[in-house]
Image (cartoon, rainbow, N blue to C red):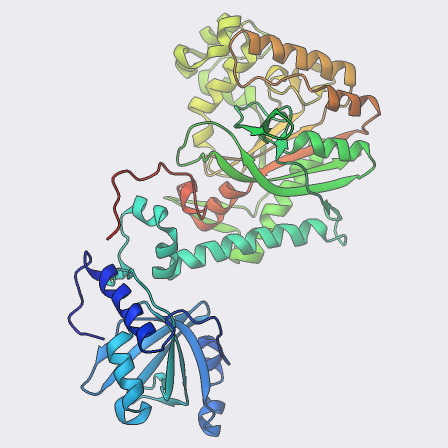
Length: 508
């Protein structure tokens, strides 16, 4: 080890040379066996007992910056559980161990260290190194200054280094894992009214993309000579399971939509969908509210959450309000999907969406106009938890119509922090009506709506075998994690979000 670190340009070559020098000396820079007795957290927790007994322990981890003090050195060893200070002195570890340390060990290397524990004069628990061994020679170092990687794109592109360098990033993704685990436990717990769900697995590759209005990714099955689509939703296979007799099913899985990238959208994202027989959309509203509140209390420890400049309160009962009521309040005139598109646009006035962004208006579809107006002008204002209810039927092709209003669907969407968190429906189970809805979608597709649904004869066949009254919901897991951890970009809560490949990069 040298106090004069090589430049970032020469570092990889220098460290490769050290790895080769170790091999030449009969030392393996990448051994396959490890002899760890304690994590760093266990060593700290058991320090007093271990000190009193004089027990030697072995810890493993990544070497932090090394502080030389003549023929001695201090550094911290970090593993997933925490970190522990190590003290290595020549006349304790021995000449050979010291020489190897000086020649080979660098900041960021993975190392195994054995020895007893003691406390320094400042009271810090420290391992006195008697023996050490290289576990993995690092070729490229993590930056030392705040461990570097301050550039947002660089952090995401090199998430491995971001995780290794920044404990708060590891904590964020640990929280994500706990959020998903808490969801699973709550859904499967049969001791409460909203539990007792069975987790299922459904195909990722579909012959027909269905269950949502979105553009799919296309792939090719060479052996079958068949074009397939990565799933854009889980819905239709879940409903087929309900037809088959499963009354409560859920799945947490990846969804793929060939659409734009933003702070709220990633082409590959995680969705939790569930379907419940013998209930309607109001049950799904109550379930979603209870689930989110439970997860916040369990993982975060509070239902009052910071969200940017706001505080979101998940404690009180969530607000429920029809979509057209929100638009009427915003524009000062009543609007309804039974009106024609021209009249709706006139009444919406400044709340109407830009004409060039409403492709569906070309064929005079008022439901799309109302939906676009809401998404453009009102969605981002819904900071406190709000179920927006009663969407136009024409933009809800898989949902039942309201019994007293054929233009409105039994569809709700939950918004928190200006984010759409979860849509939910009373599911359409009339096969003849579902066929008509698919036909409407096919006509919209022929008119240029690339996100319109396609005819799914297999699903219609399932419905003709009978599906009981059912409600379903789809909860965006990534957005829920954003909300619960106060992260304003979806890329910050996905370990490896899609990014353009780097160009012009070269190896140092």
